[in-house]
Image 1 (cartoon, rainbow, N blue to C red):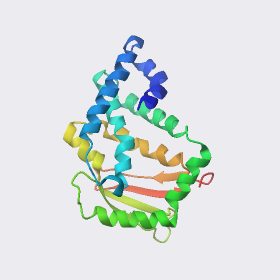
Image 2 (image 1 turned 135 degrees about the vertical axis):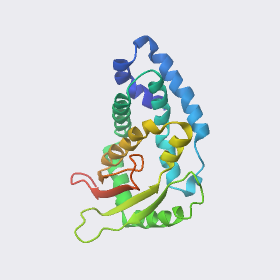
Image 3 (image 1 turned 30 degrees about the vertical axis):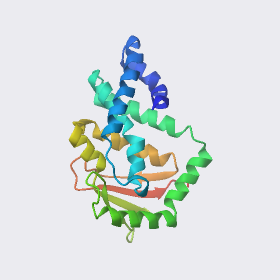
Image 4 (image 1 turned 120 degrees about the horizontal axis):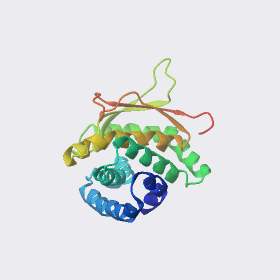
Length: 207
């Protein structure tokens, strides 16, 4: 989290008074402690979604603090996307592309099918619920996931963060692109749709 704030510092200086910067960074760290305490349990290491919560809920803390300091949601979104991409790109390209190949692999697709089936049992009320989507005739994606319930949406509704949800959703595209994966998504639960339609394919220059 401190690394993220260091990466965000240049952009933060453009939107908050320089004399406030150190205080805001500490405020974010304090808010991060609150967010960690609020983070729901969704199965620990047995659930792939635990990692999603761990990686992205920190941006809730950033959003909350900047919102309190009068930074617009659009600017917060730009800061978070640029910061997240910069953080992702600190990993060597070979490592990132290997991670992408693993995600797109047949073994991982089999794992995702199993996880999707487990999610339908709704063992943890704050968890994600989703279906694995096989490509049909004429489809160009390799596989997809339809999220029918979103842990971040549930978290945001409980803690008054619904207005910052679109910024969290926007982080997904760079998370996959930096690993050589193209994500296509036309709708989200946060935007009022019945499900989030994630469709995955390989970037030509990537995996």
